[in-house]
Amino acid sequence: MGGPGDPPEGTPEGAPGGGGEDEYRSVVFDESFIRAARLQEFSAQERLTDHAPAVRRRAPARRGLSRQALVLVLLIAIAFGTAIYMGVRHPYQPRSTGPTEPLRMTVIPLAPQAPVPGSDDPERLFENSPAAHFRTGADGITMPATRRTEHFSDSQVVTSLTVAKEYLVASALDPQVLAGTTVQPVRRLLDSDQLDQFDQSFDHPTADGRHAPTGWLVRFDPSRAQLADTRIRVQGTLQAAEFDSGTLEVVAAHTFVYALRPAGPRAGSEASLFTLRRELHFRFDQDDLRTHQAEVVVSYVQAGPLACADDATNHLRPLLAGQRDKAGGPAGTDPYATGGATALCGSLAQGAQPKV
Image 1: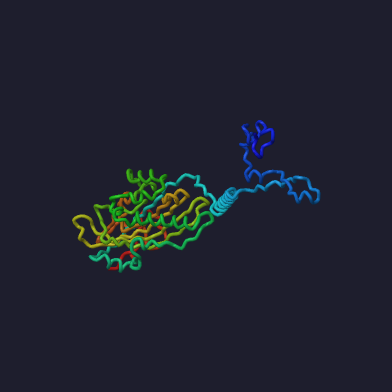
Image 2 (image 1 turned 90 degrees about the vertical axis):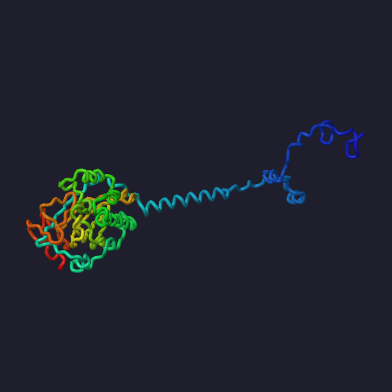
């Protein structure tokens, strides 16, 4: 007999609530399923008015971009815009395609016209010479005001001047380089394409305008002279400009004044001054600026007091206090002046010597 809610004949076979399997039991009509339905039944009140049909079609849900997609699109747009801006502001500058020039060098000895003045006090020599107002050491190599060029930024111009100053300090002020005991402080600042020429200059010195060690750096013959005062006097200028669209050029023109004494047993003898006028031309391409190195393409040196007959290719062999060169030179050349000598050997102007 059926229950109170069952039909008189009992539950039909297979109907829910009986012993049959409910074929719709696995179907779940959750809230999201109902909201997604394209048809929606009107309420009873809506069906009574206006004789509306039993169901109405729902407008499809609007599907926009998710928040994550919007953020991704925005980031891509920002990155693209930044790339365009950087490309316009800092255009790629290719490395100069030309080969690195070998260094061309000229070393002109200046012979004294009278015995070299000397003093027991190196400071007194400086005070009575044209170098009296010069600064000491690296302080005498002053950096000029800088500004960007058409193809190089402010920082790149500053880098070129900084490397040029470091080369001057290493090649003309380092006591170990001056004494001839090392060349490494200079070598490590050179463009790699010039290292073969540099090494050959020291392995096989030759007065051919390409392979003289004294064209690369300043060094005295250790058997003849040594520093009497490590406070070397320096004055000069640095100038930077574009050589071409891919190359910066720095011109360094300086006068260096050294106080020297005889080496060896005569080390206690009087000191004398040695004056060297030096002009160097440096070139920098993009790789040089990145690696903090330089190409040295011109080296022009006037130095004295030296004897015209002495070879100044490998070492500088100064004439010291009381010495003179009988041969002399054709005319007086002042290494404190900016003009250049043209002779193979010049005569050191008497006004370039200290008055003692």
